[in-house]
Amino acid sequence: MKGDTIPDQHHVARLCDNKHIDGGFIQATAFMLRSGEESLSVNWLEFLNCSCRESEIDELRNTYSRKLKLGAKAKIAVLTVGEVREKVLTESPDRRNLKALHDPQYGTVNDPSHSGIYNLKHDDELIAELILETVQETYPTRK
Image (cartoon, rainbow, N blue to C red; front, top):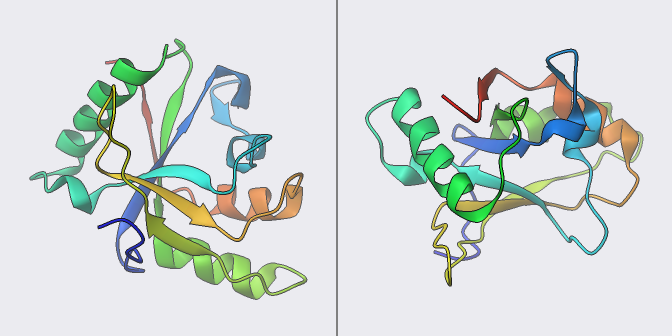
């Protein structure tokens, strides 16, 4: 339900487009807010209720391809909510307490697992670097 807190042991995925990939590696800029955003857009993997990670990623690929033009180099980064929160809380100078909240999107393209990471600031490069350090897995957006 909209506004539900995503449990720390659950996982979220972030779509990292071509401009945030260098030499096949995701750059910290992929985890920075864009102008006008109030949260970092992610998808709650356990919400998809799939049998395995590959099924979750396939579901996201389908959702993303209906919403966006996916670049050839784009990647999907998988993060554990609690690891992101703990890393940023303990290693950021202001002991930033991030929140991961369910924020489903409905309309022309349904994205029921859509969520956000909140309490980020624009141009917050250090926090973006800390989030990048918690990436556990990456997948291409195209099979």
